[in-house]
Image (tube, rainbow, N blue to C red; front, side, top):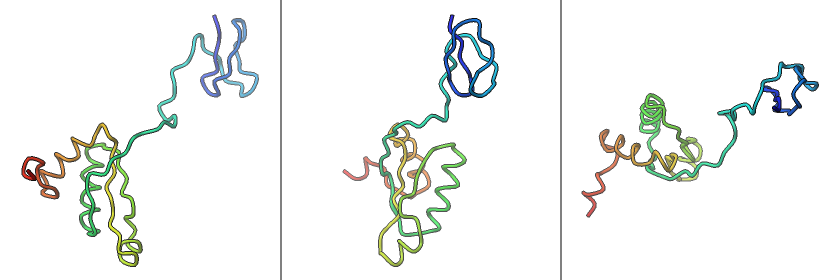
Length: 115
């Protein structure tokens, strides 16, 4: 059975008990992958605004719902000087949930009302 360092991921043969690189105790078998590993996530735009108050309120609600988001262009300088709006981007798999939340808060219209 192979041994692995849970800290740096180095691989060793059975019979080794400490990592030669970092001194951490080895574990039998492959350790689980770290959750903080970098991965590609598809982000989609679900809302845009010029209003800093809207941005702050939406951020507080999404933080409370533990939803990962990014407001692109939320800088006051960009919104005022450049005339651009802030775009709310969320993970593709959470877009429906975020649209429902924004609809409940009155920021967007129901999709069926648009047709």
